[in-house]
Image (cartoon, rainbow, N blue to C red; front, side, top):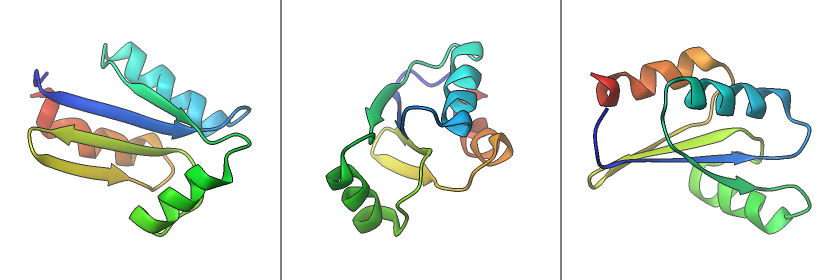
Length: 87
């Protein structure tokens, strides 16, 4: 895994998709930080400004100076986005 990889999971309490993402990252030994949007509409406002979505999970992946976000629901999208970093 790339040493400069930064992963942030935007999630909320009780979100099964969010838990699925966190479980997958843990299984892959990928450290991540969490931004909990539960009861924080201002965090959802940030997601809307950055990515034009208000739903979670959103996974931000940074490597070096390049950042991308996975806004689609489903592990298949996350796996594709992480693939270059895991080689």
